[in-house]
Length: 291
Ligand code: L34
Image 1 (cartoon, rainbow, N blue to C red):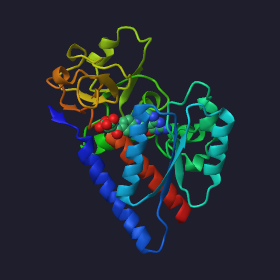
Image 2: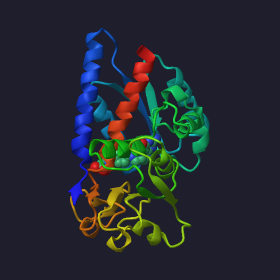
Image 3: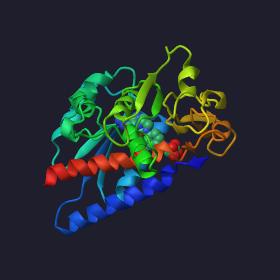
Image 4: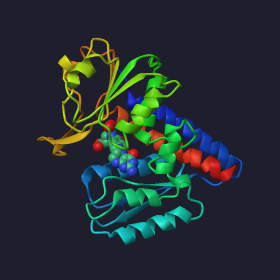
């Protein structure tokens, strides 16, 4: 078993981005600028967004954090988005999900200027992605592709089984793994909560990608010897550590790792890659804006 080290790769990617920024600034250009909208005070969302802001500082991006209360209305949030859509010298922004129940998430995502949608969530960008057109790829699937690429994991002709069909991970992942490209060219099975006999599919998978949010869901008996296992799940589970919780993936890591050829840890796997790809998308938006 070998570890797909998301922390190490993210560091390499951030170094590359930092050098690109330094080169642009040397030419007299402004710095790339990313904004993040954080609604409410969910602990995990706060951590992720704070880390995204720190990442910006590390690579030399400008960053802005827009914090809104949990009680924000649809209209207020739409107003914030309209400002970010046109604010000068801003390259991209994200609205961290999930949003509170009173908010219509689809309407919010559709209100984002697709050229600034560095999450790649807008229907225009999702459509371009699905049609192999150049666009912002959603950061988590993009991060997984980058991992497979940089570790040279064979994907062509392989059977990739994805568990979960969310709009931000499972569904785009299924499209990207099936593209005529590397990484890609896989035969894809997209499984979900209504799949009958799930372990039949996972047992016939060369690559398993779990994006469920159910701790320890994928057990060793569900995995083929030598499979590549990518764990997108990240759930806070209470314990008696100082923090009061630990992070647990969808994969029963200790047992599955004995059978897997390659496996991502949680934490330190897909999460850091997601953040690195957000920076990559922001750099792309910046290049589009400053060429
Ligand atoms: N709009 N909402 C929007 N864009 C996104 O791309 C996200 N996602 C998901 C949730 N909502 C979103 C993220 O940013 C999940 N996600 C995300 C980002 C980073 C990390 C995990 C999930 C991450 O950095 N994970 C670290 C541990 C961090 C910790 O200490 O909690 C890891 O090593 O896995």
